Image 1: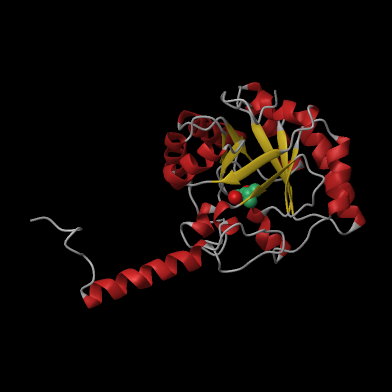
Image 2 (image 1 turned 180 degrees about the vertical axis):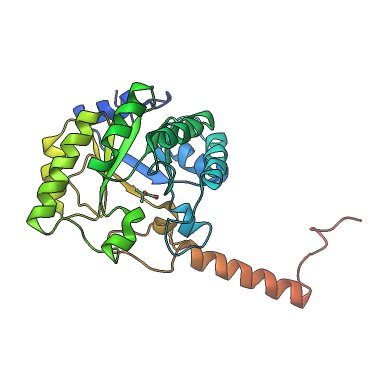
Length: 271
Ligand code: KIV
C-alpha cells in the first residue's frame, strides 16, 4: 500500500522512503490551525510552516523580518491542526546564522513547539549546523536555489543556476547536504534540467517549487495556489482557486446587506 493511501502518521523515514518507492510527495505551507487542519484532512504529506508567513500573513515585503517568537506561534498553531502530515518548521533569518549554539537552540525550540523537523536555507555555510542537528536527533530539510533569505544578495527573485558555474555549485552543495544528513531538499526556482540532474544524483527526495516536474515532490505556498495572496502571480504557481475574488465578493455582499437592512433576517435573530 502506498504511503498516500495509509491513514497512519507520516514520519521523516516515510518521506525518505517515498522517493525509493517512486511516490511523489505533495507539500504545502500553513501558518494557522484552520488551514493546517484543512490540508491534513485533504491528505497532504508534508506541511511547511514557512517563513513566507512574513510576507503572506504579516504583510512584509520579504521573509527577513519574521522573528523566532512569531514563527513559534505559527508552529504551535499548525501543530494543533495536524494529525497525519509531517510538520516542518522554517528557521527564520538570524535564528541559525549567528552561531551553531543559536541554531541548535532555536531548532530545539521548534521541536518543543511541535514541529517534527526544521528547514534551513543554503549549502556550504549550513553543513556543520546540519550535522550537529541531525546528531542531536533533529531532522533537517535543506533548501537550495533561490533562497529568499538571500534576496538582497540576489537583487531579485530571479531564476538561479542558469550560469554553469552556479549550477555546478548547487549540484555539489546538494550532495554535501545529503552527506551532512538532510532528509529532503527544497529546490526553488532553478531550471528543470538542473533540478532533474540533482534529483537523479542524490538518494534523498527533492521537493521543487518552480523547479519543474522531475523533482520527487512539489511544494507551493498555500495562499498562492488558492489565489488568496494575489499581489503577484509567479509563473510556477498553478492557481487551484480564486479565493481573494470570492472573499472580496462575500465582503461586498455583507456590507450591502448590513447597509440595506437585509441582514440580519428574522431567522437570524432571537425573539
Ligand atoms: O517559506 C516558505 O514558504 C518556503 C517554501 C516556499 C519552500 O520556504
